[in-house]
Length: 318
Image: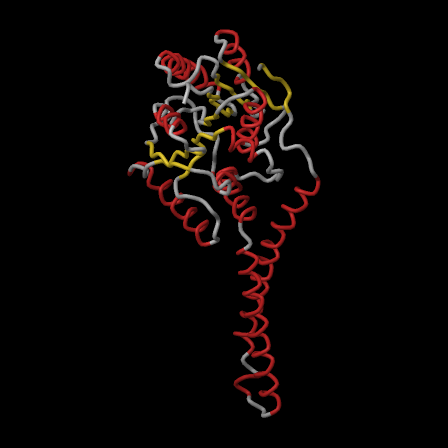
């Protein structure tokens, strides 16, 4: 295969502290790969500014002025990491490329693996996914939460490989297929998994962030996880149905016992109100939880049928 035209997509949100360093490192890597024919000289780096409120876009514009291979897209507001990645895919497909690689703006992912991604593409793989190696002891809390997340997703039959990140390569064929996905609620890790194309997994190490702080927090990560569960699994609804069936059966048992207690004057049943009250409170709480689960699905449907844009581009330098 001839040297492919590669688009490197880097979503960024309020990354002014680290972004110049990212541009410097990626520019040096880009030139090296072009000189060594890893990919073609008409390849490019595309930054997606996810509605940052700091100087992220100004730094991107400066990078575009200094380097002809750097391009940028700016959202009108913050639409989220998944929308930014999708915008990178769509923009790259429109500009033209043989394959696109996504990587985080903080460059904690091993950028040297990009060459392995491209080589795998040259070998005929349509999808190349980065899989991070286990966290170190200093990241034990993240390790536990990550493990719990993937176990939960596995229990819910959500198609997701453990430790699969947004660090990946998609071929033009994969982009063409992905462009047919029209859902508003995005969980691209699972969407990529459902493509069914020839896939290779490459492990990489996470390095310490050099500047700035991560924009992901427990709330945003939990929201993303919940979105993935609801978008790709109906098992929670099956569980709710099962719980409802069990509660209904137990309610009939309680009713039958109370009828027997009144007929045969069984005081130990009719007078034992305390446990019954506790049971009522428990059932009420469980019902509210189940209604919340169903509500999540209804909310997803509402967002989908509205058909609102998944992102809005305010400015672009292509």
